[in-house]
Length: 391
Image 1 (tube, rainbow, N blue to C red):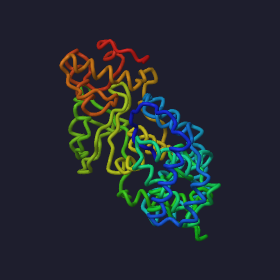
Image 2 (image 1 turned 45 degrees about the horizontal axis):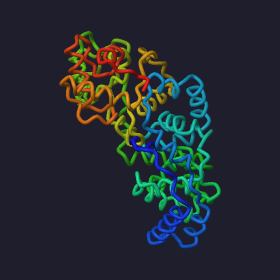
Image 3 (image 1 turned 90 degrees about the vertical axis):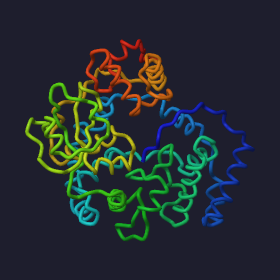
Image 4 (image 1 turned 30 degrees about the horizontal axis):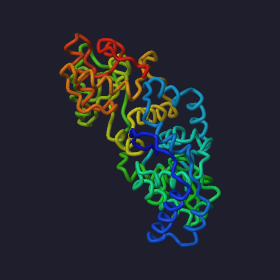
């Protein structure tokens, strides 16, 4: 489960006395929240401060990647082949999950593949130590305190022993990388052994993933979205998150990836162009937003949907994303925002985040400069604004 990226300065590690005081306070808070005194004291006695966790937390938002790099790393021939193999191997289990939750098997396999490469890597960090380290850091203390208490409750219920509770730097756990609060609310015992074990039980992990997606509103009648082709001189201002019926997108000249007309249907979809006008375009349905409830990244949601399609037998994208577009650091995006503002194209307060306000400002600048107004900070935009990607 991904976390929202935020910028912050790297702090100095706390003194041993300060960290121990924080641990004691968290232990008391956990006990007051219903965790047994025995579990809280045993776990917190073994918790250690992890410098690496803070380093990774601070590094997380510093660089963005291009859509091509993101997609190609996560949806490749090896992962597709392995996904298809597991789809066959676990067909009975996955069919059961689909019957009970409405989530098709290829999507379950796709989440599994993106989260842990089908269970090959869960993370090697102590979840209680990671979460305590983050809970004692002021940046997002409230959020991680809640996650730590949830992790202690998971140990308390006997789902996993302390020495086996390992996961990502941020505390995501098991085959499908649930955060502890998500585990408590949505993990299930699907194999009937009396424990909700997302580390060692594939049935528990797959059913839990299905239940979580179902809880967020997965619609079994529709897919995630689809690749489409845009007509010449398309108005990219329409790719601003608005959801229109397929019939309206059809009327605007959009076809499917093979040039065939879209269905003349009232199904609503939003247009996404993750690489600007040079790359692929997608119409995203309701289930796309459900996927983003799992991870708030459009790149991630497209990758899940595309991997699911590939696992189900589909081919590669008809228009692959260009691999030569620049990747922008957070500081480069801030410089871009400052340059746009100085030229009268208001992008809001510079924050290093390529949000809707910045894309709108880019679009206006492109239109004034005779460029395709797709709102994407491509090479031409950066050159005209004299922005270096090496920051």
